[in-house]
Image 1 (cartoon, rainbow, N blue to C red):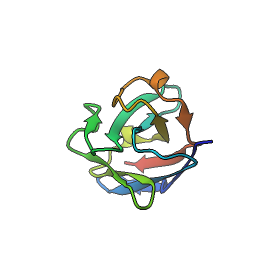
Image 2: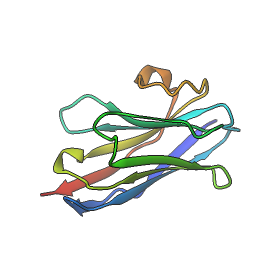
Image 3: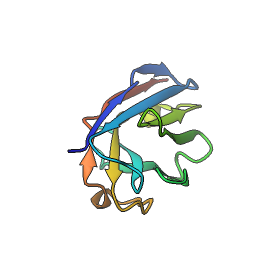
Image 4: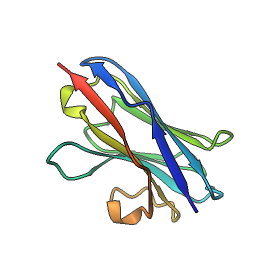
Length: 124
């Protein structure tokens, strides 16, 4: 049983930085893609970034490119999302997700496993 537990969300001022963590357990993740999605109030959940557990290849949404960095620590079984130059429009619940087929997909339906989410609020 795959478990994903996010942490690190909080209130931060615009222009600030935040690092989210996703602790993964229950499986060997060597073939997996791990990703971050987010959902703002009244909006659809959207893709933010993905990383290949095996080789560290990444994929980013346009909104995240240049400001966010996704990475993984194989020893700690943890995925990170470093977010810099935060904007009020980055306010959302951020979810960690896992896809066992490792395709770096942008599609929610590719991801079978999801965490509970962590709230990020960026004040102006």
